[in-house]
Image 1 (spheres, rainbow, N blue to C red):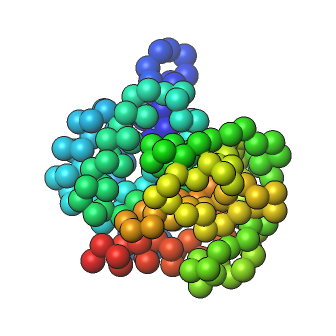
Image 2: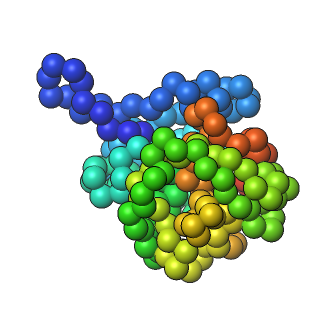
Length: 198
């Protein structure tokens, strides 16, 4: 979850947009928010035997060390146990960087919808081209994809907009499925990831 501050006094809080609960419940998925408690999050999650781990958006990687530690531990757990993972915006950045890829600054992607072009395999969910919402200033450059991943969508400038692991049920997108302007196809992508784990 995102780390936010309470109004009027110092009290860091873990929070997530209500849009996520609304979306997931409409898809018959029961969300369980995970607190930013570092590696202890693995024991917390293990008790519930999740069918999917979502690494949601928010602060850029490197801004909040406790969140970075929590999500890095959860990603390692998911990879070791075959739990499907969907990275969203920051989540895609974290997956790519933790698996050996690079990130770079990008302009014109904050609150600016744009078209993305889909690679083979993802066209079945999205078609060849789709408009997506966009709220990031950090991107995965075309030459920055981590070795175990492959680019599955790019913008018209060649920045990577979606990734998929070559052997594990891990996918990531730079747009926000929970926000207005998300492309049709996100539900099918999630169902496909969960189906790989069944």
